[in-house]
Image (cartoon, rainbow, N blue to C red):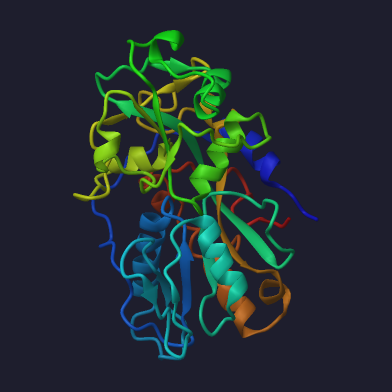
Length: 342
């Protein structure tokens, strides 16, 4: 077993640098009829806008290449119920979230899907053929409505109590009196599973009966979140990208939600990048693209094509400005493109 995720979490804290954010995102949309040879993925909401931009840039770099040259495509987490990822593929339920994307990778072959976007690392239930290829650093904090009843800061113990429903009123944790309404993203979300593990001290919290699941992650436009008593986990990179990076859309933006501190550490610094101490905490996470271990390690054209996109010398790792333009932190040194399995 190779598990480099913990090392990446610790190492990236010393590399947080202020980088100007771009304001011209790729159009977030499903691909149109990818060819059978193309490299196609599904999965995480958190990394979907970034991978859409990477796909557009990568494909633009090979304009005029023969049709036999693989292009890169990424399906959005939301849209029609079913998708046919590429020519000759099986029609599958659209994966919405990291775990859903990994399940699609495991349940199908290269004729249908080639990779999964993932905002979480390996966890119980994954297989040894799920190879997590690191590309950036993110963090997850909690959010609440601006000028609502929630305080500016919560401790890990308080977050745990809120999501286990043993803490039920904002007045008991430094806020204004009001019944706390905890929400979680949809099942299959990597942000959901990561957040529950972070507030549980590495043992995932089992949500109590007061918790409502379902709002799409990394957006505050769902009506139930526009409530003075709501609380909802949020990707710090996604928030930065939406608010200061120019990458929001009418349906993909924080709405009235604002990010809050954990253990008195702010998630965002004055330069509008992920705060290094927060990234180094239990709330910092590495984000990945997941491919099949067997495909990656078997010498040949397909492995070469995967590594040309996801590997240490691939397109993603050699374009760190795009990574930071979408709110993420670039991984330090040679960490981008490193792999880990369950």
